[in-house]
Length: 358
Image 1: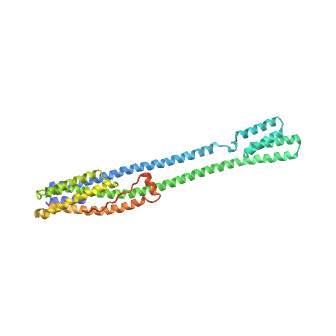
Image 2 (image 1 turned 180 degrees about the vertical axis):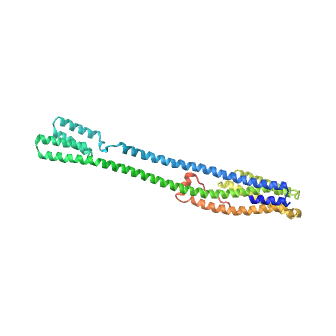
Image 3 (image 1 turned 90 degrees about the vertical axis):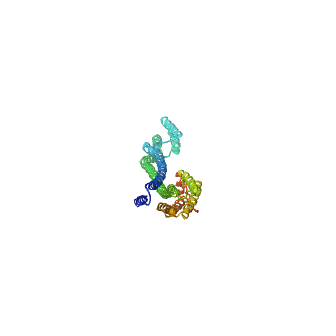
């Protein structure tokens, strides 16, 4: 754009164009720059919406992680002795055993102690109660068998008591491992999500910027049409039909470009059709130069003609760049896991710019 401005200033200083014509050319450049800025702003706004969505997803993952981990930690911290968790029926057995102990019916007490232990084998107090029952029965009968059983049961109770801290530690370590594992998995998924998301964004941005460059060139072309019509109006007084055709075609293209998106197949088709109409009119307009030697020799006319030809060449180059970038971007949407990310964040495939034929 800066080089174009310098060329216009140079032509004005050399007298090839007058001040009014220079203003028209500068206005054409300004309009094309504004068009490009507007497209870039739309791209940036759309990108911000996507970024907001990805942070919502990552925040949701963190919340889910906290909801999963917190109960485990609360349970781990709040549980002093998980062996104390017994059923109501087990508790009933031990209460009945205690009742028979008080009644000095030690055999019945032993019977209910064993039933309670069968339901809660890790309950150390149950073994202690059973050991006490055997010991009292030994004192009553003086039978060494009951003494040995009491000793054996008391030792079992002591072993269970010693195992409780170890089991508590194992449980905490298991919960910690699960928490760390969940954090690692979600972190890994988050990193993958960000990497592939950013890759898609970069590829889409390249295609969008290329498209914005094409749009700016088309806008520049449209803004040069009034300058061209101004240059030929005195020479083509009897060619009103051609001038009217160009004016109407330009208005049609301008209207489509106001709300034109490269992602819309139908609008792209209409846009390319309107461009063909405009190009046909311009070809007829340039053909007038053969009828009017003065027009053909006009520096202003030749300058505008050269600029339009340069714009068409630039559009062709940028269209090729755009199509290559769209090919890379569209290919990314087909493969896992980027196809899933594309669905989540609504990355849509883009249409190619077909070669225009006049």
